[in-house]
Image 1 (cartoon, one colour):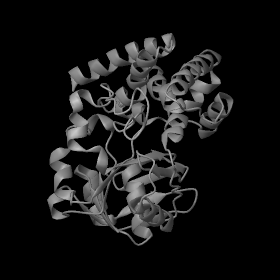
Image 2 (cartoon, rainbow, N blue to C red; image 1 turned 180 degrees about the horizontal axis):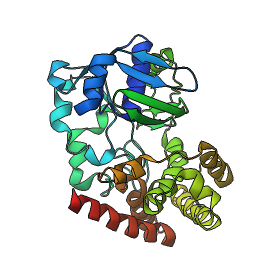
Image 3 (cartoon, one colour; image 1 turned 30 degrees about the vertical axis):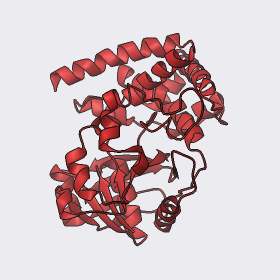
Length: 325
């Protein structure tokens, strides 16, 4: 299987290194010092499961790679609409795009029945900009349960988790998902193919919707948020509101709030990707995580006063970051 990783950052480089270790023909698209280090020394993964180094091809020019079977999209969701020039050289007639994003994906209502069938979520796909770049027919959904960080150029610190759940937006059983799952598992990752990925999306979102914005607003780690009584209560309220929205769009996550909080606390002093972006002066991946759920609440009539308040404050912070960049 020929795979390009577009956006070989913490998650993308980790997945790409594992896929290469498993025998896939992997090409990483990155830039700057991180690219230079990967070209010279490969991708060095430091993991409690065992360190390893992989040497996939790395470039900043997708035209060097050409069409592939799978594009693993490691970019943050806010960059999807603008990635067309990088993505196009990698696309052949049957190329699938695996969107390893947090939050609600642009394809969410594709292949579903009911009043929201085919509905476009504006905060996720503004004006259809993402759908034009990545048609839903190419999309394979992916929910990432691995926690990784870039420790230095070309060096990925794997903190915990190896699960990358995947699935077709229309719930179909596809050969491309089965083949990708086999390639991921050959590299030492867990990659279950789910009939309907939407439950995984909401399980992951229960954590992201709390810890990503709160970590940025408070400059705190996940464990610090959980250990403070006031912010833990706030987290619980936000999760309760999130579950109400999930139920109104037909999903009942099987993971309890207590279990989700306990899992976050066990992660320890892990700094979320949103906090890393803020500290580097980058805009934060909040629209698909927080604003999208508020939009879905408006569509379904779910009361989400706490989510709405956090969205307003975090949105202003994101606006200030964008203005300064």
